[in-house]
Length: 301
Ligand code: NAP
Image (tube, rainbow, N blue to C red; front, side, top):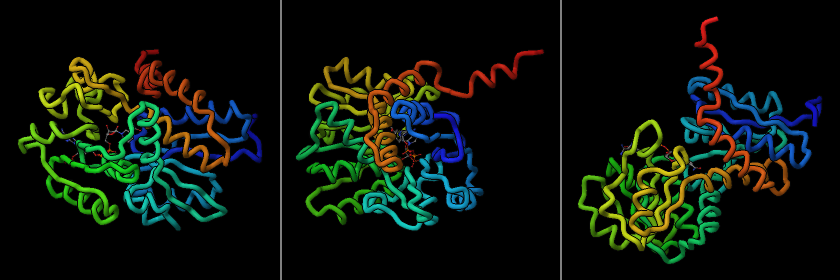
């Protein structure tokens, strides 16, 4: 559909937005279903967040994804939160419901759908989560909701890890929780753990071939889920597979969080395969969508 007066605008706010694969995923999906929607990047500095959120209403923007560093700060600026976003304490999707801004967290559900696609059922299992940021919180709540028996949070700071554990225990009475730091002796806990989730940025392209935990802790009975998707195969994933463990990258979570946001905004089932192909294409054609532009600028004329 051509852009016209009835086009509904969606997009993403973050700062910076150097790495985002969301615009092609959503735009290809709108195109596939012939929906009169567009998805745009909005680079919003932290001190402009409040005005930007007001702008969603003023400009009648249909919906917005929220990424770093705004996922937590945005909460106070919204009219309502889904129960899940409230429990997690982070929002990645805003729906403009006739002028009322409602915050959702589709990262959690996206993670669960991706686990299901990998045929891993977390019910009754012991999960170890590395990291204590927004993604770790979403994963912890998702796993608790899916009936995990026990969740271990490992952080650099014991305080942040403890805050997540105690919030989990107060929200999900059935679950048992434990807090550790990377400085503790982790060998025993990895013997018990069944699902290992890396929710730290350690292993991302720019950090090199680093590991969030030594490979000696990983064994063939583990399912290792690395939230990172650039590169698609981190040193952790590669090492885990060599040890005979099953492993997955964060592509599925990224895909399914987007599919849920699409459904919230359009009320229509997301064309998941179209979105998956757009995502894979985006990842293949260079991880910095603005790279070409920067390179061009450097060419002397
Ligand atoms: P965040 O809020 O900045 O949290 C990052 C966490 O990693 C913090 O707990 C931080 O510890 C910890 N950390 C950073 N460097 C570390 C190091 N060298 N050793 C140990 N821990 C370290 O980020 P986030 O939003 O949670 O994202 C975390 C990762 O998940 C990123 O790689 C992101 O790309 C990925 N992610 C993927 C998806 C997906 O859809 N696949 C969705 C969301 C996020 P401190 O608190 O001590 O600083």
